Image (cartoon, rainbow, N blue to C red; front, side, top):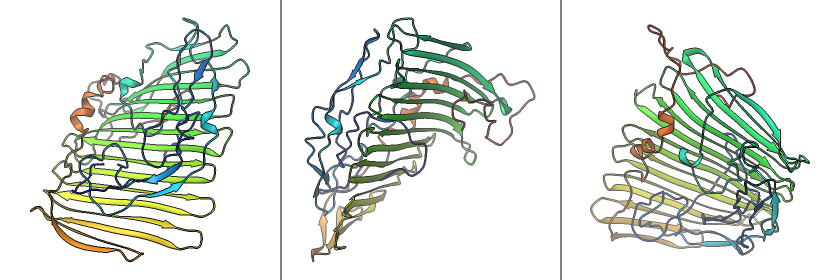
Length: 429
């Protein structure tokens, strides 16, 4: 989220699993940090020789993360840039060390000997990586129906299937499924690709991946990219989403993320994320959003909070609205103890568009300020990644070919489509 305003601080946000499909998971689940520092949770190397694929450790990054912090000078997500202003302070909170992160684990080989079966691109998802571009998935739809399976030299099994479903309004869904298991069924991976289209111009590209290992760790991830015409404005729209989920098999630990992006041809853009995580006795939530109307108006917000099983809670949130250099920003940082005592600091800024900024705030401990200062106003009126960018990154989506439309046959105005009949098909829209 881009900040608007001038001086120093900004706040971050966090939340949780508000609906949507839970998706894929990281075996190591290094989610101790509340601030959005990137963690290398897993690296899965492809062997492609039938040998075991090791999952690398985390170099102690979780063990070294002694504190969870709501750092008002750090961004709540990758889109906050420029100078940020607020009067909130940083509040550190201790977190337990994780035994789960330091293990060196052996994972089922997802790369099989050459020409013996499908080689999965699957690996546990990483936290806070947003929505991938279609090129990163390597989706390669088969042009013919396939139903095959086999056994590798190490006793692991694999399968690969593909097909096509059709329905009303020219609905067409091409799909490919593949997967495999270790010889003792302790580890398993599944992967599905699909593309959908109909005569209304609707096009969809999607992926679903899941897996589990002998330690009981499991994960699920889905990704979708959709092109359609808005019913009200008749403008072309592209929507992208990603859901990721991971769960530990040895600890009370897991995380979930739901990311979404929407764009239209006139520059309107909406982005957001909902997140949730837990590590033993501590849980945290985060949500944030950005809205650009394509005419210079922007709204950004973030909200995050956390709590321990003992009942201690803390959080931080902020919001900003700007148009034509005029706008406001406000927020709150708070903490509630076991004995129900609550500390909070609220703050705000008014930007008048003439180089003057009104700053005000107060806290429950008696702090207060109210002043007008000379400062420049900074904010982003346009998204750093917009319509032109997403169109350029969606060539495979645009290349999806619908069924041939007979002369004189037109689609119904209902944008819905029939549900593919069998369980071999991907999720329906």
